Length: 211
Ligand code: SAH
Image 1 (cartoon, rainbow, N blue to C red):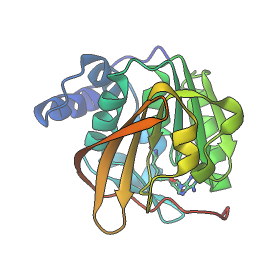
Image 2: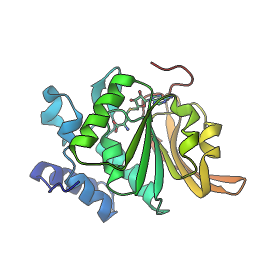
Image 3: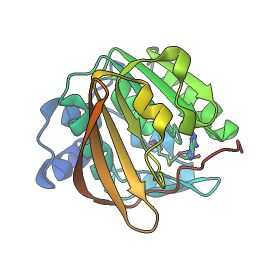
């Protein structure tokens, strides 16, 4: 993507810096990614506010702060090949695709998946593979991954995702129901170490069926 920063996206990036996001690469990508493209026209005027917004089907585009925070955490281990669970609008995928070599993303609602795929194509982001499926199971054929980011809240950590992490791979995942903790789990061989980052609020990661 060869986007240039727009005034409103730049303002958002500056607000995120003020909120504690320090990774310059993440802030530059936020500043040149048109978030309004990931929303219905009727919500376009709110695109650069630091808030989560509805994207239809009872789902939401995450708050820009949390997108940036999770991206910054994920980049600490310099991953090249990344899996995202919960494509949704495709905004988080568009941010990640500009910062890693290869992104795979899984969504269980077909209409959201199709729309996200079109948006990334429009932005000339071609290093992304899309799967319509149950992200609770990850994407085994494409693994192992250097990092996995889950953008919906899981009741517990899906074992398949742990298994699809490469050596020293990192899983960023919100875990819980009403109150959720954002966890970073790092793999060391057969050992996994977990740290709590902060409290968050995501829509649930559905376990099992497809929409
Ligand atoms: N990353 C998205 C956030 C979307 S909200 C964005 O930037 O817009 C979370 C998404 O996770 C929703 O689209 C929801 O349909 C999806 N989801 C929930 N459970 C899932 C599952 N088991 N597998 C794949 N996607 C799932």
